[in-house]
Length: 109
Length: 114
Image 1 (tube, rainbow over the protein chains, first blue to last red):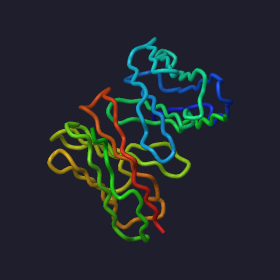
Image 2: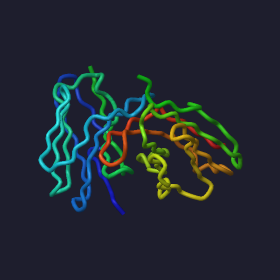
Image 3: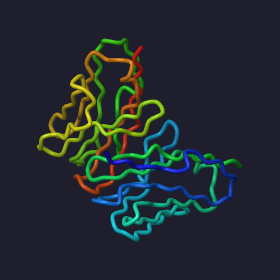
Image 4: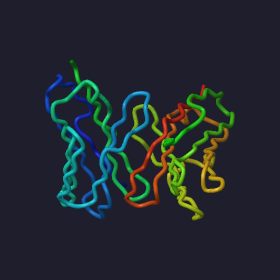
């Protein structure tokens, strides 16, 4: 059974802090790693789709790295803002995605 | 452009009743997926459709669950004889083809079985 683990489960930071989360996934038969942001009462929003070992992707203050050989990805948020408060999900797979349980981020003003 | 839409947004039903959940994908997206999130759990894959190919039903939890996609567009997820453990948020997503394509999610249907 394929398992995707995310840590920490939740995180509280102050506005302006930088933070990062981890996603661990099976290192064998890698396909793709997706990151999503899910704000309360909204649809999950795709952040990145990563397919190559060593991939680094960036969107504004958010960036992600990928290590397929050891089976992990990091998501970084630089200078957190209250609007970054959301659950961040990673998902592994090809076609049907296997999701982690998410990291719930709360950014306090 | 219009995103993925789902209806109803909330559904409360009595145990034993049948329910239908609807998904309208983004126009032109050939792949459509259903997931659900039960309380305290992560998103769980249920089924996906790609064009006219047979759907991948490997995630459906029991034979009470079925889904169809008419005309390669709108999809309906049907749950027969609902049970309390079926209570969850049901999410639909669509993408331009399969594989590594980014999946665009709808807002979900919150199903409560009493």
